Image (cartoon, rainbow, N blue to C red; front, side):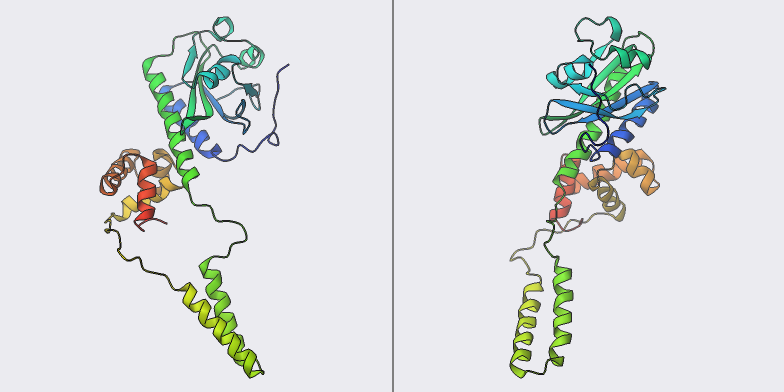
Length: 281
């Protein structure tokens, strides 16, 4: 029996925008008529097909793929790209999902894993409706699309998370201001002095402490900071280019320049280094 998961099956919204953008770009760069994919369930054994691009039916929507089953399940199990020239007759995969695949009219299919820190987080598929070999150009484009999603997820994973219920320094400063304004209105002199003393402690605690030795300043151009800020939100080069009104090649150039100045080798390292240097929040 084929299992399907609705949106309530598990929350795959984190990374959905990056996945959707990668699928659209994959179709545009390769001419593949259909691309689809999904992210892994927290149990690590299955994923749900949650994003479709170019599909003619809803046959694949919500399909739950188990590790080892079908082409995507084989990709999950091996943690490497897998492809078939004719899905219905392929001998090295199981055929639990032949019904939905045939309903969409797919024949030649490639599946590429999204791997973050050596853990598979999802799978991207590209497909033809004819039984034709997947060429090197298409293969490379599918792998590149998966890498974009990987980097976006890695950046998102590294973003600092503010604990719920922990006040920010801005909130502490506001509370200090309110207490300071209220203190003169208190009639009891002893209580008033105690409130003013508390205000003094809050003011001292809210003052930023300068490090004994400041790290060397990194001089990034405004556009380099803009590109890094977009990358820090998980945007791909194409998404950053659209957001900033630049060409993707220009975004890549700014990103390479920023990485060189920061001594970073990857997008994630560049974002972390920029935050550590205080040039990116």
